[in-house]
Image 1 (cartoon, rainbow, N blue to C red):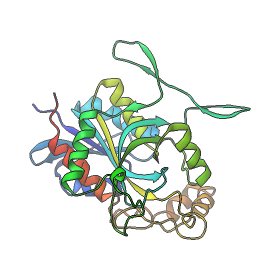
Image 2 (image 1 turned 90 degrees about the vertical axis):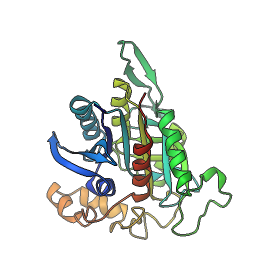
Image 3 (image 1 turned 180 degrees about the horizontal axis):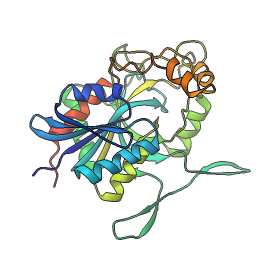
Length: 295
């Protein structure tokens, strides 16, 4: 029997476009995550709504491995920009993932720590980043070319026309901190040599590494670090394809400082389950799933 491909996203909004292309057979819950068992063009697929944050993503990836033994783990969703020239809606093929929560503080500042890792033979290793499977990276590039999406490295004018998309290849720094502030994002870019930031992928990547499962994340940029208007003077814009957030970073911080009930009610409009986020990234993930052929 063919092992399923696992497609993961933190929120229903990020998974909605994927689900619209699947034939869903049944829905199961393990922990706080929702698992959609079904197929894509006849191939078995398990789509997972993990919930946001590294810990829920890690737990969901572990549940996927334990219950479904996937042949590959693919991740989609939104991501913040760390690289100059990125525009909202650009796509990032994540070729490596770092843990920006795993740091040491000293009088000289903050320093990334190596990621502790035990391989399948029980040998301890220390890694700066978890690499994505090169075969999956190549399939993602193939899918992007087929859709006519240019590589950012091939685009001379990085300030693309509104509505256009570019594809970037590089590392993502993941951690359970919403890194809105521009100086912090610039620090993350330099310290981790990353071009994007998110809140889940290191958990999923670490589980995939531990169990020897091919892994890849494809994310879509929701905000532009170098837009001087993005955080102070305008509403936090552009969850890529179809929808907008309705709060600035400062407003979100004020809401978060209140009660959990206030956060839930005030941000309900942001997490409107009728809208789809990161649609272009989802389409590339779906195409990779179609092309994937496990060894």
